[in-house]
Length: 203
Image: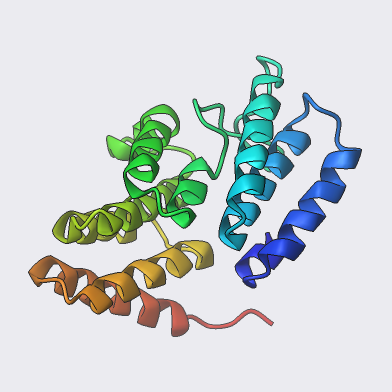
């Protein structure tokens, strides 16, 4: 994950591949590593390898037992698609498919969060909304993308990975010269970013 966020997709994919050799098929570790490999190869732009990695990630997800943990550190979302499918589609320029995949994740994994009934993973929900916003921007639906982004920033306490996606959406909307909703998102993004930067640092 660190290599991916440092924009080192080949290193990220190579590290995931090493992990896959050690983690048996049918374990959460194997499924999560397969998903990381899928996302990393998509970011690298290798379409053939990304397609193969996605097939393996689907196989790994189907191989999980019915009682695989869905909460906690060693858990995985048991959705229709492997984790990071929407992000991988987004990176491949398949924006409509990415939006559809993200909606499936939200409907399957974040029902309580979307209905504002609490939920155990508000940051995951916020990140999914931002991926959806980026996909909507990619299809040209800029106002809806900004509205989705606003909903994400108003969900709980944003974390670093949430803000990284929010920065991408803010850049996309700014570059596209979108209208009023984009301005509202930009103002909210700056407000949240300033709040985060002003927090006391832990020593």
